[in-house]
Amino acid sequence: MDYKEIANNVFDIEVSGLKEVQAKLPTYFNEIIESILNASGRCVITGMGKSGLVGKKISATMASTGTRSFFMHPGEAYHGDLGMIHHGDVIIAISYSGETDELIKLLPFFKNNKNTVIAMAGKKDSTLAKHCDYFLDIGISKEACPLELAPTTSTTVTMAVGDAIAVALMKARNFQAENFAKFHPGGSLGRKLLTKVADIMKVEKLPILKSDMAFDEIIAVISEGRLGMAVELDQEERIKRVITDGDISRLLRNEKEKALSFKTSDFGSTNPITVESSMKIAQAEEIMHEKKISALIVCDDKKFKGILHRYDI
Image 1 (cartoon, rainbow, N blue to C red):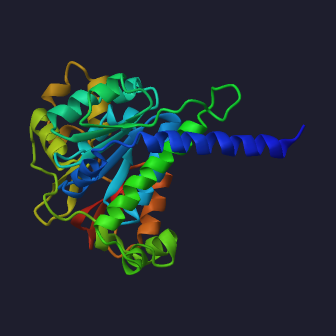
Image 2 (cartoon, one colour; image 1 turned 180 degrees about the vertical axis):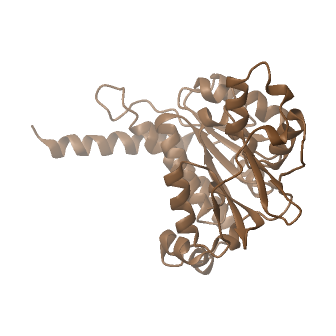
């Protein structure tokens, strides 16, 4: 068997797919770029499976080249992470079939939240394509996979379209080498080793709970804070209690009939994990990974200073 011939055939198929998608680049591509440039929020990429993996790379490219961006898993979004989506965010939703259930379920929220939705799908008559603001056709005639099952050509063209968007945004922002160096002092690891928690933690409009707040008021504070948690402080600005989305979910699951009567003092954690503002974000990220949490309370001399969320790292 000639494996090199197989490899060359893969290249030929994928190059053909790239040309196919290039030919379908819409006339309103400039509008897509302008919508991201003019957005007051961030560019949020979302997708399941292989589309999600490609989406993570696209988001990472954007974030490192001047466009505020993060990846949101559709499944996690439907169970609380939608709280991270702001009114001014632009959504890039990726699904080759255009019918991915986890993504389709999010469309009503995006519409009600007035988010601009850019869909990348392989079928122009799909649900996703029909219910977006801008559609990018990534449909190809043939996958490189001989069984036509494993996403191969389709993921290659999706990545290329993402790169096209990222590079267009770089050009629009006149993103220069010095800007890139600012975001990559010694690479991403270098940044994490040099940057402190104090440099990126959230310090404004933090979700603060009052003592004996009613259950619906607690939910409102957490929702408005968009950090998946809220804190109660004592008179000396020290952490008294932390209530998270997870605490709310567990309470509703375990105390269905009593949950609505619970107040601030009835649940949550009185001994949360905290870090100091002088800690390097590499250490903070390691703690998040080890403890399987998405945010950290920042305290100096036991006094509350802010919140560090994984999406800010």
